[in-house]
Length: 385
Image 1 (cartoon, rainbow, N blue to C red):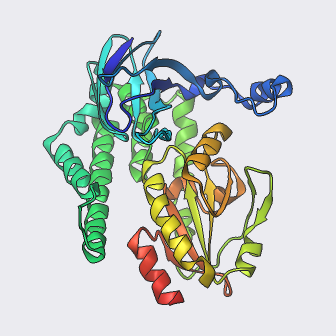
Image 2: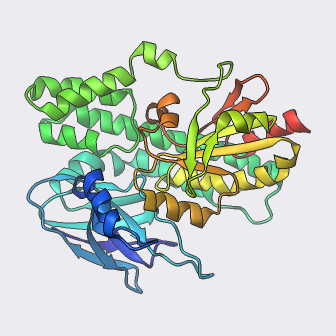
Image 3: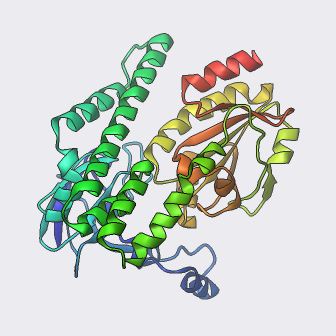
């Protein structure tokens, strides 16, 4: 397979990198490598599942060749992209899934989490059947426009723009879920149905419907059987009813910082009036878009009793390390992985990312959920000023 195309700023330099998670090292092999690794030595890229990499040229173009024996899911990111001031941009992987398939593919990156890949049967069926519709492109355009800062914008105008931006983003997510659901339920090729589910970064009830439909077509496929059982349990009405929200008691957990410090949320509650529990990942674009504003809120309200603890669901420690260093998180930064105590307790995989919970530390009660940007400010102003 040949994949070539153009990237977009600020990711128009660095190394275009393709990942196949199925090729990543398993925990045993990684532990064996650590036994002989030098201090502070990072695992090779192949440990993360990197299967191809090419430098991006001065014209923002790249080209990679990858041996492919059949269609399967993959994703890409730009590593080592440098900002004008000399800093390095963190890689963003969310929304950058595609299908490896024989032939020649063309990629056009529109922004870090939105690209269009053409030229292949499976990419067209899985993605372009909904991504190239006028409705979806219009929704993305409106969202992009509202993301763009306005020079001289007042605080009130900014807050209104952010509210409209959230509505526009939700519209994009809704259209993607509708598009994937249609493919998963109606496409005549069972492999396309499977790939549209496997390549989804945002999961919803449509996945259960798609897997049930696929199970009728391929009843002997163990992946379908196992996945269906897992997602039926996740979206079971009784399970959904147990999702935490305002009025519920917080679930305390223990986590570990990058330095190996053990942190207990019960201790953080004891030393604060309000605690924000935040779930994120290095590859989650919307998560990282929130961090600069969260840092402003933290600086403004910390001395008044506000504390933050974040937990990454990154599966690779090097991703967590790199993102944490780039973002310079000033609060308790814990991890890692979907199967750790914290994300399991809060059903983070089902809830999606980013998500957060504002807790009254004294009563152990969740008083708000998913506070973003000025919504967080307004709630803290109400509580602490």
